[in-house]
Length: 373
Image (cartoon, rainbow, N blue to C red; front, top):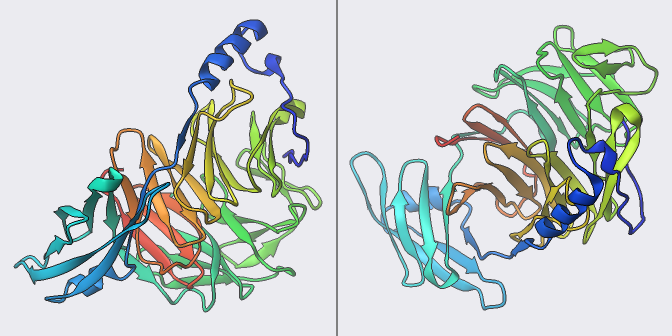
């Protein structure tokens, strides 16, 4: 795997690495695409983190707000006027907001003055017994039965996704554990990458023991010393610098660089040509690898760092350092907000079928069920 860490301000073009296009023709098309960039500084609605618990009580009340770019923040409240026979609360909003829909899983609100609406989803369940301290990373196995997570207490554990029961603690690492991941399509092994990006270890889930140092080619471990190798036709690596680089692995050739507004924390491919990346200042960039100078879109919900991005359906889920975790899809006219953390950073998001898993500084793994995925 090639890692791009450059502090340059220029964009380096490698036209011949992009199939089926003439360099001169692509430059013209790129200019046309780049001129259509849109900055989505949308209004953002926020709801009290324990809103569902508070509104299950008759006369229960919670706060709601809408931060509108360039305008004063709008504040209001929601109040429960009773609970129906199927345990769905009847909620009314103050005059600044409207209640569009209420269900057992969430509530859909709108703010007319901010011209925005959001659906707030509560966790399907939460797991508090996996780790004793903050959880820094998680991943879900391809079958959806097992989860792996790391914590600031130095532990890495395997747990049951259905009930959160701990299955095994993986030991043998020397340094702090920052991130972890299951091998693609292989459920009996776990790969770990250390913060230095140069040291990696694997654990066998059957024995809970560290295996000799190795790399990965496809799905098969290849023994390498102090390296992890992943063969991909193109790999995106975003350093904690303001510059991000795309590398074509097979030729070790840099395709292009993009200069962002702040340090990049995470990135993901949305398709073969679209990339989304999150920065320390809260900006989320959607890039087209065929357009080498300007992002297609820039999303900005808050100034909190973007810690994780997960491609899903026709969009992505992003988590931030202020506890925000939201889903953006092309076919939705509203934002889906995953609620629960009280301004605690959400470090990682993972998915399996209709379930979304998040890990947070408060030490909880939250599991959400989204019916529209």
